[in-house]
Image (cartoon, rainbow, N blue to C red):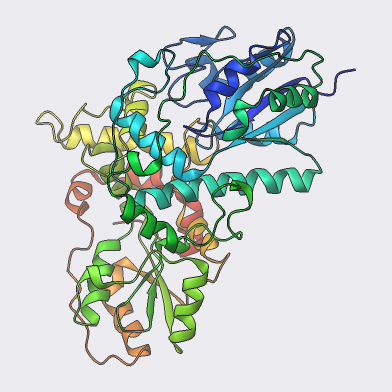
Amino acid sequence: MAEFDYFVVFAEMRTGSNFLESNINAFDGMACHGEAYNPSFVGYPMGSKTLCVSLEDRNEDPFRILEKVKAADGLNGFRYFNDHDPRVFDPVMSDRRCAKIILTRNPVESYVSWKIAKSTGQWKLTDVKRLREDTISFNADEFRDHINKLQAFQVRLLNTLQKSGQTAFYVDYEDLQDVGVMNGMAAFLGIDERLEALDKSLKKQNPSALSDKVENFAEMEAALTRLDRFNLNRTPNFEPRRGPAVPSYIAAPVSRLMFMPIKSGPIDVVKNWLAGLDDAQPADLASKFTQKSLRQWKRQMPGHRSFAVVRHPVARAHAAFCSKILSTKKGSFIEIRNVLRNQFKLPIPAAYPDPSYGADEHRTAFLAYLKFIKSNLGGQTAMRVDAHWATQTQALQGFAEYASPDLILREDRLEEDLAILASQVGKTTMPAVPAQTDQHADMLNDIYDAEIESAVYDVYQRDYIALGYGPYA
């Protein structure tokens, strides 16, 4: 009896997963069906169905494809990335009849390759005569986000395998050129066939050195020397396990205060106050901490205080909707926005602002958004649960993986709470706090009613109860 019924290739964008798939498909007894659980498509970008299952069918029942994969002739599987439908992750990982293949790549290489592909629009190459080349600018903050997502997913994979007593077949990007490794993978999967040579139909797109592909290479080198928490070649082991929010912490330039931001809260208001407390500018604030540098800061700041600020669930849900979904400005979630408009029929304009989008339209769209968020937080959609709309209770629990904040302040009494905080570190004066700390409050006040309160409570009941909130009005 075969050991496995199907397989999953756990990979990321620009790790060589297309090349690995082409070589898996070179074996007569195996078939890989692309990104079966990509939120934007099923299988392949231009495809409408995988194993006769459409995107709409998959969103309604994610396990339909899984059953088709198991039932197909031979040994079948698919590729799965960190932002794919989360509903299938736990069932797949707990299934010992599922073979796990984990593909990794030097994260700097994958980041640069991803940036070039975004710039050129060329994600696969079969003819070198059609190669599109470009150089990119390294962005340290963007890379940090990239590496944090990879790290979190790889550690989750590793922990799940360890706790369930399973193992996976690990493949590095460089191994993809070794036919012996491909044949070893086949042996791991229980396939008797062996390849004589690799499928070379896909070409390496950017074979030149990193220094030739990155415009600000020296700046990149300097940024990477500060990221001393990982081994670039071994993704599963490159950082000690930690709470994912540590790099978001913000410290005052001089005072012994550490702000632990909760997304979609009054972050800019607090940052301005924190800088003003030391007669400084927001650019002078300390940030981008690692666990090591945070420990150093705490040792150097005896009597320090850390704090978080919570916002009423109605105001926070509305702020997340306005800034990340309704908006089309830089910093908004354009891809998620497009999926919500096209697949979930969220009634928002193609671009915002739009003169035809008034208060009535805004109220309807916000209620539709809340309906989606309820499903999303309940694990019923293919979208990631983003920190901007995850519960504040969950954010605070995440902080506790490293250390809980000393104080939890409230936006609706921020000036009084900040005064208490300032006095605890010896301050007798402090900057003024704006009367209006929510830039979207006027839009919310135009549409707020009992129905909106009820809809938000239905989604964020946990925050209402844990944080003691009553109605927004």
